[in-house]
Image (cartoon, rainbow over all chains, first blue to last red; front, side):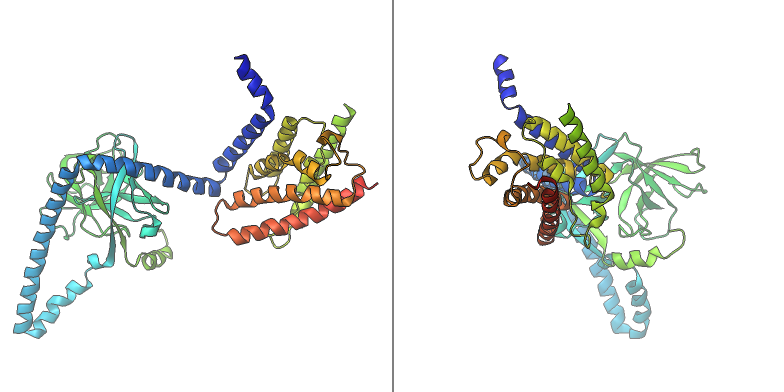
Length: 296
Length: 168
C-alpha cells in the first residue's frame, strides 16, 4: 500500500497529465458531433472485426443450417426462373403468331417497375440482437463494398431491416425488430403479391422476435387472417412485393381508430445468415424528384 | 499571494483578449492566432508541473467554451499537451546554460531564446488542435497548412508580445 502511494506520488505529474488529457478527449468525442461520429466509426471498425472473428467461429457450427437455407432459396429461385421461362416462351410463341398483338402484351410489362430498377448486394450478418427494444444488425459489408445509409436489408424470407450507419468495412442496420423501424405494407391474399391491397403500417411491439404489428384503416374484409403482407413499393427503399409476414389474427380498433393485425414475421431473426442489401438504381433521382413536393 | 493574484489577472486578461480580439483576427478561416498560449508558456517554472497542467486544462476549456467554434475540449487537450514539454524545451533553448528550469527567468531572455522556446510548443499545440479538429487524415495537407499558417501567425504575434513584455 505504501509502495503504491509512493509510486503514485512519484509520478503524480504524469498521472495529472494523463487524467486531464483523458477528460479533454472524452469532452471532445462526447460533445462534438463530428468527432463523436468519426470516433464511433472507428469503434465500429474495431468491434466489427471482432464480431466477424466471433461469427466465423460460430458459423462452422451452423454450416449445415445455412446450407439447407441456401438450398431452399435456390429451389425458390429455380421455380421462379421456370415460371419466367414459361412466360417468355409464351410471349415468343405469340410473337411468332402475331407481332401486332404482342406489342400490346409486352409493352405494359416493360413499364412495370421490376427488380432491374434495384441494385442488390449480398452481405452477411455478423452480429445481431433480438431481445432489446431497439435491435440492430451488424453486417460485414461497408462503404468500400458500395453500402450506403438507407439501403434496405432483405433476408431470403423477407424484409429484415434498413441500413443506418456505414463505416469503411462494416455497417449497422436497424432491425425490423426495432421500435423505431416502420414501413408501409400492403395486404395481399394468396400468391398474388403484385395486386393492389389494403395499405397500412408495420411496427414492432418490442417483445416478440417472431411477430409484428400491422395498423390499417378498418374496412370490411380488407385484411383477413392468412393474408400476406408485402412491401408496397411506395417508399424508395424496398422493391414492391417483398414479404414482411403473414396475418395471424385481427384485433379490432386501437385507440387511434386504426385496426391492428398481429403478424407472423417471414424472416426468422433468430437464424440470420446471408442477407441482401437493396436500393433503387435511381435513388438520387427519386429523392430529388420528391423533395420539391409540398407535405413530403 | 501577490504573485498568484498577478498571474490570475494576467490569465483573465489573456483569455478576454483571445475571445474578444484574437479569435476575430483569423485570416481566410485558415490562420487564427492563439495568443492565450503565451500565458501558459510564460507561467513561472516554480509552479509544479501538475498545477501547470491544471491551469492549462481550465484555460483551454474556458477558451473552448467561449469560442463559437463548436469544438469543445480541443484547446483543453492541446494546451495540456503543449505545456507538458515546456520544461524540456526551455532547457534545450538555453543551450545548457541552466541546470534546472527553475533557474529560468523570462525577464532578461533574448529574442532568439524566446523563438527557440516558443516554436516547438506552438507547433505541438497546433498539430494536436487542428488534427483533433479534423479527426481524420483525409485532408492531411489542408490540415497541415492550417497548422503552419496558424502556427506562424501565433508565433509572430507572441514574439512581438514577448519583445514588449520582457525586453531587457
